[in-house]
Length: 289
Image (cartoon, rainbow, N blue to C red):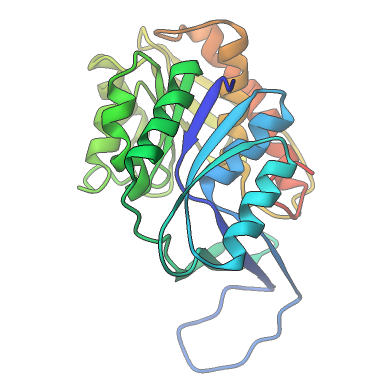
């Protein structure tokens, strides 16, 4: 039995560390380091939730290659239950060009395979949802496939919009489904106003992470909550946002909160999220280990 069902991407990534992101011109650069690691925002949330002791099931689109087995095995070994929805072709792969300052250019080498869930797949996911207390829905076509099953429950739905700009049509069904909104401030000039508007329309709360500037949130009553980032020696920024979300989810679940999130609980959750983010920032891996 899992408390949280996470639905979305898991991948195998090649991380290449550079002194600076390359200029758009023909030239050669030397990497200061490189490594392969588990990637994908749903994998990140699941790893951190499991590390926090939250029983977690992740639903991912898996390819027909050996890397699909590798991805699922890494998640399983971390204590995550994996429901792989399999399709033809390769699993998802990224090339991430990184700098020590946290700058990143993500190149999709292989997108997640297109999958059409079978009746058996839908039954497996429905069974997991029936035992859960919360759904974390990430941006991926797979999440849209299971929206009917999610909507048939009364579970609170947490959605990570990442760098949403406020106008993307792809994001619209995810925004509409969200009881709690997570995002970063990379692409929106006034995320607080957006979060306020969603709370006014019935969302339980909304939070925008701001990197080294911490995070800002809007509670159910419209109160604005701000927390500072926790100082840490940064090794790799991959997974920090997922860790932040996991810390928040674990805190809200421990408070047995099922509906609107008040300012006091939101602050506690955001502080826990900021602390959990340090475990990703201090690690080369997506998770805390």
